[in-house]
Amino acid sequence: MKILTNTGPNSNLALTVTDGEFTWTYDEANDDHLVDPFTSTPESITGPPSGLHDINLKINKSDFVIITGLIGSGKSSLLQALAGIMPKVSGELNVNGSMIYGGVPWIQNATVRENIVFGLPFDQQKYSQVVDACCLASDFKQLIDGEFTFVGEKGITLSGGQKARINLARLVYAGSDIVLLDDVLSAVDSKVAKSIMNKCINGLLKNKTRVLATHQLSLIKSADKMIFMNGDGTVDTGKFGELNQHNEGFRSLLEFAGDQSKENKLVKVETTRKVETFNDNANEEFSSDQHEITTNGTIAASTYSRYLNNHFH
Image (cartoon, rainbow, N blue to C red):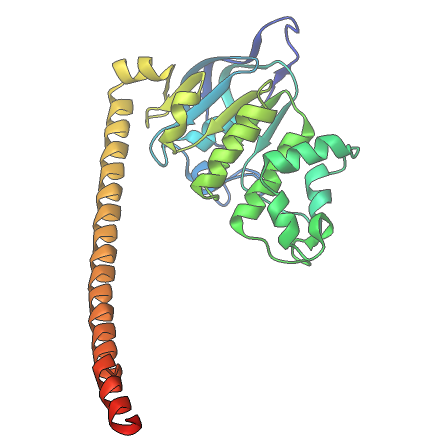
């Protein structure tokens, strides 16, 4: 696929797609997709039924753009189309600046630091900022040799969240102008995800162009622009209010997410009530037992008095 880079250096546009048509090509001998196994995902292998159609996008420099939609609607495929991985059938893709794409987290057989720096010159200040922004400092304390711990197939095993954050740190340390992020927050808990959003994606990377594919709708209001996958290979773009006003599919997704949130809250409340009821009952039984122990095991003061009077007078 031909990608035009550094076109119009004075332009405020970082990425543009004009009348883009993208599809996965097949190896007729084995009917497998010709995709890179190290960067592809299950969604990218199956993809939308008929590829991506009529894609027209304009993304400004320093924009934070979120790609969202139902599972399997083509979020990862669109990112890979922008990255030049998904073949273009027609149309034009212009990339103004250096670009890096982060797909499925992967780890090489090396130290944690080497996985992050990945062959680039080591800059201690930059490295420390990246480690902090990606919430890795606490992990270093837990690892046997900290950042010099050997990981990978021949090293220690990392959790999914640790792999995801090390991969994110590698992308950030690279310093590219455009960063394509494929659901980088799915493997971390909500507290860590919030910290990464504040310190990294909207912090250390705030002057970069960021395109994040995610199903986490709690993040969408912080985006400068949204790309909604309609599920048929086409997309709709705009701000939150615009999509909410004219895209029925987007509204349905929000309503579904709202219903799920309510259901989760109800389950949480019901669970809390059951725990509180259990604790109350347990406390009542404990108090009753304590009262019985106190009553049965205590000698009244009058008994002591009679005993002393009878034996010492």
